[in-house]
Image 1 (cartoon, rainbow, N blue to C red):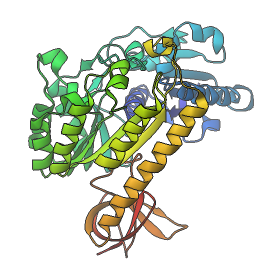
Image 2: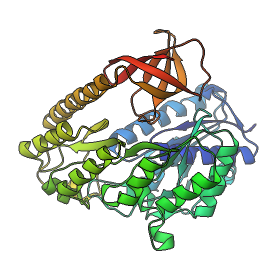
Image 3: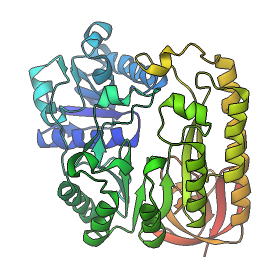
Image 4: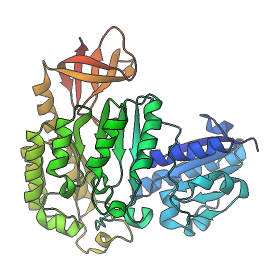
Length: 432
């Protein structure tokens, strides 16, 4: 075997960091990477199993890759990540095409597992590494500050897949951040299942603001961005730091999931509508853009409770709103609730709230016409003959884009763009 490997990464940005860890360990083991899956003797699929749709995507990729054992050069098919963690030994019978299943804590031994042909390895310790091979564009990178989750929301499989919340030590994170800084990364994006819970498990107190302070002091990133902050832990201190520090993006991702007190309680969330509305007032006052997500069609959700959610989105106008239909996941407390919502009702509510969120975004975009924004250039749309970038209020891959004209741009550089219009969620402008 000539150690040529093709890696497919599925799921969220936290999983992407795991993939980058895998790439680093493979590189250390002498593997060569190829973008052409048909040229690979080893294919690794890093899977997500958060909801049924993610599992379906993973299985489809596995079946597609397995065909290369007869039509290509493939010798070993390896499945890593959440799917092995969720189903463990069941997979060896369900997916006999796979040669190795590897859990999220075993990546440091990925080369040994492949070479020995271990069928199932889901028992290792944490495998954090301070060095990675980036799969993002060179001007931004994610820093995973913790793994697992202790929140135990009733609809969520993450604690059973990823285990308890485990923060990384601050000094280790600083070294990894400095490594990324030295590679020329301009925007560092902090991720975890719950970024705001950082530090409590190993230091006895929440340490997110302390970590941010050290990153600002010891690294030269142009921007630091926060994703996945739980509302009950977004403190006045954190809000003040985001709004007051020039190098922290005026942006925060807060997955609210709902605003009805009754639904929040059923979801096992640790906040209520009064606290959420108070938090939104503070964030708006501080000039911080908010991304949030909502689950509609949760068991027992009435039309009145759904309308309450719609009214909140209309009144408090999050800059970015993701809307998802509740997914009934086996093994979760919510799956055992008897008042499940019919699929057609869930779909109708997704469409209704999604349309409202789009109107809110368009209304906001209209207020930006004539303003000059700092935009980081990332790509070009050859069909439209326009540059593509992001404003400070937009995270990569999930939020709105800024399309603009100009003479010349370098990827990762920031330019002044005057907004002249918009198209749906996206802005249109001219480089000044």
